[in-house]
Length: 342
Image (cartoon, rainbow, N blue to C red; front, side, top):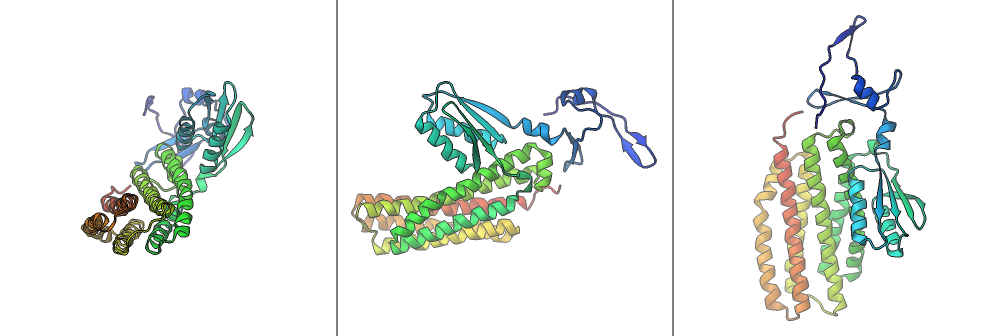
């Protein structure tokens, strides 16, 4: 939000250079003096943004969180995630008394998840920092890697379902954290780019790109979550010593393969700007809905064990949701085809 506007007259310096002076208030506010370097970014609306030195910007990315000894672990973890997503690179956690063992364990786990490092730690203070150079990151490369992991998870989950391969199901379930690693990092970049024109220019992102990619990343993460959910329910069925009947198994597998094909096609359509392909995915959503109804009928007709019925319904729901997320991604592609030219 613009709070302070001044008009400045353009003056001539030499034969070809045009200059304007910097407001004295702004230079004092940022402790700038003659000879200091500032950064200038060109926005897509042709406006200019002037930044003080990078060193001063980095100093603003530090934050201190005060933690009570009886603080809920979920509350601590969510606060750390919120600070990370909002661009803080250095998080200092301070306990009034001391960190409990569960608190320390949770802080270390979330730091690892966010690609952060513990720089200092004792019973009363823990300092964590991200050491990644975000200016060299690539949103598209990160999304591509995240997508490939999620697609592989789905493929293996449906293979495990078809073959009742519980070892493969455990492997799928264990990979879910890898997708979360990418999701947190990419969402942090997008949130920073939405308020930092210099970073947005480095990443070649416009405001609409930040919105679209944020939704895209969330959908990839949700697809991976449902692949992990399918694996988890297979593991639960094994724990009960039960198996899904062959007719139901075949229907769920076929629906899963169709949903995965939708997902792969939707992502490829978005990355290649294939609007016709995206529209085709939206139009074919009814195919999955029909298979879903057939699965529901078989689950209650063929299965007698309530645990297997519940697991089958959860797997069926995950298949439908994966297809639904594919449609969401296809809609992003269609919407982006009318994105205003920057």
